[in-house]
Image 1 (tube, rainbow, N blue to C red):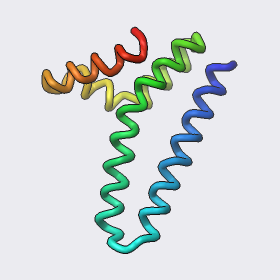
Image 2: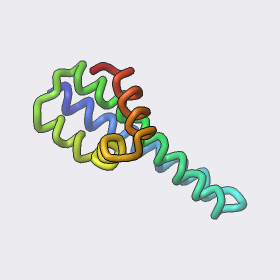
Image 3: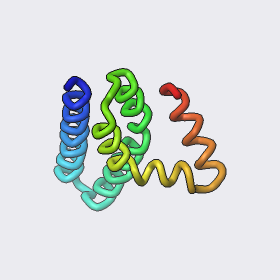
Image 4: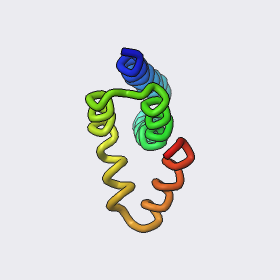
Length: 101
């Protein structure tokens, strides 16, 4: 039950953060450039959030269904990390290994 709460809380927090960044970007002048900068930042944060997510799932001893949901959420990152160019694969493996194997 703890792992499901962890997962729901993490998803809610990340959604709230992305919503806040987009809201701030829309308020200011030069909306188009700020919007795309916000999108780029959200993609980068999404990609780098796989490490903490893996750590939380391992620490909470998440059941298999929760791990499958996480795998679906991070599918693009996993595919890019496993099937991308050699430099991308090396970066992915090193980064994920920092959060535990």
